[in-house]
Length: 92
Image (cartoon, rainbow, N blue to C red):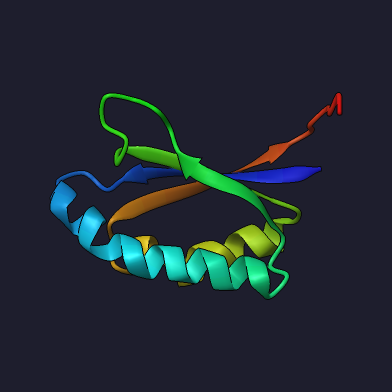
């Protein structure tokens, strides 16, 4: 079982704040992964508004919750997050 965190921008957030915050978000996810935080993959969706939504995949719900709790995108009120339990089937 894996856990998917879906991020959506908080309504009314100025997109420029996402780009200002991104360096702190990137430093956070790199450190989280390097410390063995159970982060498998993450990134934005390729859409007309790439800052509008993204997702991350984690090995446990606890890791997903811990990530959300410390991510500048959520701690600064820029994004809302939800966790989905994913019963993944891998072919490779």
